[in-house]
Length: 556
Ligand code: ADP
Ligand code: MG
Image (cartoon, rainbow, N blue to C red; front, side):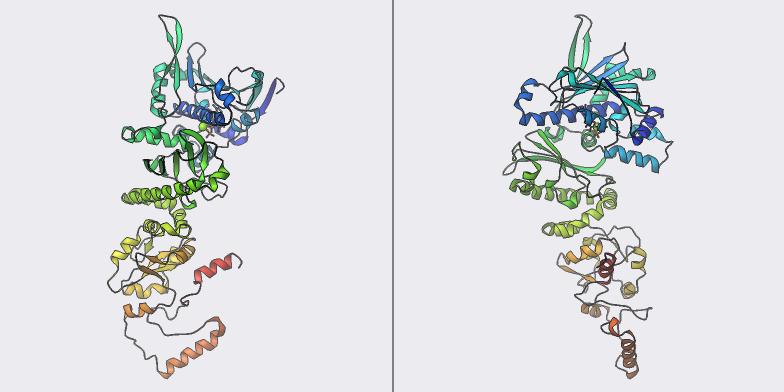
């Protein structure tokens, strides 16, 4: 930097800052949570650097987040001795919007009512939330790999469109965030207020958060630790409150919504690990995007290693969030080595089992399971094909609609379907179709409706593909009702009202065959139909009509 540079915020950022500054928000205090969360991430990254750089570690033994309040200057300073930022990083991180949480926040504002910006307080919008209470923010930082003290950088902005970068001297690695409070926000200069906020949102942060105190008698400053500074997942779970679990979830995911359920386990024996997994209550907007990163936050022996470690869960459970802390992997592990590591595979197996168990536990709460199924059902269905070993457990989690459900919502489990079957029904009947409406009105259903035999109605895009893999459940075979099915005739047991063998009828069949020629294989009488004169059926082992439509759509 040549002394000083002027930069403009990216337009999305401007929009967000504008909202921050001009809204009447109810929950401003969350800026503390956001800044502390960033400081804690930066220190985690620094600790990771120590693993490969002994030298750094020696210079830099105690990690801390420090807060000082200055009533004369109207400032709050939040300092950390974490990794810091380079110039490129500062431009990218504090000038644009990269965080997906913030992006989806903006999108949700667009969808709802832009004027209703009271919403802001409810969301975690990262660093920019500091402008809710500040008229000016200064960031001073030096990256841990920048050894020259003179190469620190100062970022300064009033949040109104521009920011400046200046070269500064910064003695210690890490970052100081200085907030120049708006006049009406001086409540945040009160020591007790800050301590309460930190206890409320950030108690679980594993790094000491200290506040500067002034001792009037002895006229000295000292640092007082506010939080417990124990990583949440290492604490005995009987002492952790729901609120603490929820706040921790928000800290690691940037999700603005509460999780729907979680499970926390410490495993000892052949494998040693602690796992804390959460099921979100809302799916990430990008969950269908191939570039979207998923996976757990990985710690080894309590040291942060990486985010988005996607090697520990199968793809169909990619919506799961959480933390894995294991003693079984070496600290210097890389993503590549993780990929083809035997220990990784064992962990994956056991974490998958745990996760499926957790989802099963959720089925006991019908209301919550409905929410879950709506958000993640489509993704879970991928598991039927992807994870043959656990197929039956996954199948139990599926929910369907059916003739007898009589509504579009998918609430029926396969277990319930089987319980409802009459004694002579041997198979689980289903129909795949483009939409619920076409399925429900399909002539294929006539006889089933009449005979009170339930049929699952499948109209999600993935269903046809899924049903190729799902052939049996608890000893009952699946049967597509638009394929020929010899069993069916036994159940429906309707006496023919017409004499099939009559000459007239035979002539009709021949005539149809002549007209349709190669388009069909054969014409037969059927007892399936009540009001409809004719339907198309598919042979037992050929592709169904729905599947061939899919192939045609894909150009094959
Ligand atoms: P998020 O934390 O979700 O990425 P933020 O807006 O809170 O979004 O922060 C943006 C980015 O700025 C962070 O990802 C991080 O790279 C960087 N950053 C913020 N605060 C610090 C800090 N104290 N030390 C180092 N980097 C920081
Ligand atoms: Mg953040």
